[in-house]
Image (cartoon, rainbow over all chains, first blue to last red; front, side, top):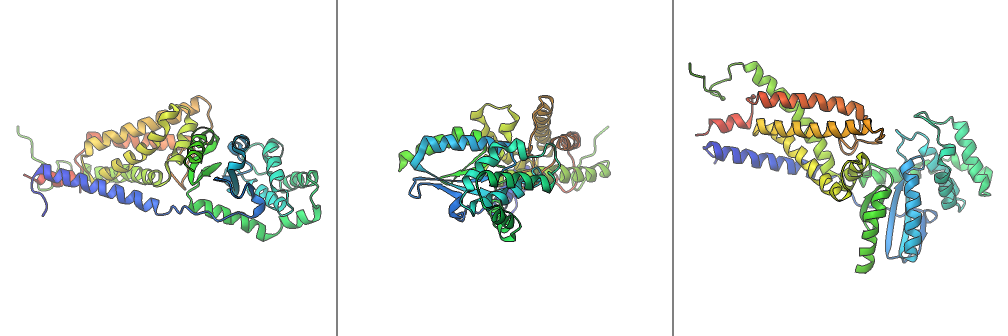
Amino acid sequence: MLPASKTGRTVLGGAVVLAASLLAVLAARAHYKPYAADSPSYRRTGDPAARIVIVEYSDFECPACSAGHATMKSVLSAYGKDIRLIFKHYPLERPHPSARAAAVAAECAGRQGAFWQYHDRLFERQREWVPRGPESAPPSSLAMWFAKYASDLHLDAKAFSGCLADPAVDAAVASDMEEGKTRLVSATPTFFVAGKRFVGSRQLSTLGTLWIEKKLKDR
Amino acid sequence: MTKKPRGPHHPPERPGLAWAGLAMRILVGGVLALSGAGKAGAPPEEFAAAIEAYALVPPALILPIAVLVPWAEVVAGFALLAGWLTRWTAAAAAGLFGVFITALSSTMVRGIELADCGCFGFGFRLAPSQTVFLDIFLAGAACWLFLHAETALSLDAWAKEGS
């Protein structure tokens, strides 16, 4: 029975508006799947029995991820054996056209047991290999830098260059990206610290650290 | 001279305006509802990171704002779509657009480059300059609705029919 008075109809209208708002937000939330598959062993670091697991979605070309890399290093050194880090590729290809190629190169280094060293090199020398401006670097220039870093780390050059062309490696990067999308990762770096999301190095170093302290106390 | 009563049984003096008002409601309300639901449906830390980049708000307020603003957008959006308290929701929408325009313009003046303005939530991005123009247009449309709040097919008109 619909109300007959103006006030009753206004109140009912408000309830309809609120219900529609709630349903719209719930529908948008339905896309969120808080699930992360484990990464290959070379993209995991820290004690397997660590009390806190951090899953990081990152992009080698992103300047904020380079800053996040420094923050993560200080978190790892501060909490040592309590932290286990899992790295996930999340190259944002539109703003960072060379990021996916860098992810593939890091993955290839990982297959030769040097993921973390290569990862550090890509972040620490970002200004060297990332082209200035919005254009992507010529593939030859990127390949040259990636090969140089591989050589610096004494990786097998032939296996490395063969790996860069292997579609299965790019598929592994794509799989991480798909997973990130289902977790509604939209910015990098995004960290899931014991399941809780922190976006950017500032959130990690402030709220994230407090969260780690709380989790360590709780357990 | 007596003024003619209005409402569904007493159509407005200029019905064209009422239908134009409906179009404006759909436009402004649709953008607010979609962008708000996109942000409110995503974890608040995503929008909080975008707000952080503006360097306008004290850190303690960032997360509460990241939770509240998207919900304000969704509710204002659906209120406009339904034509509920149109004058006041149009004023609220104009206020929201005013805040967005000020925040975005301030980053341009201060030379802050935003990777993502965080305006439309997950999956849809516009450059900050494009968003400012869109927001100015939508703020104008919301102001127009504030001045011409009697629109076609609205909950307000239905409520007015009540005794």
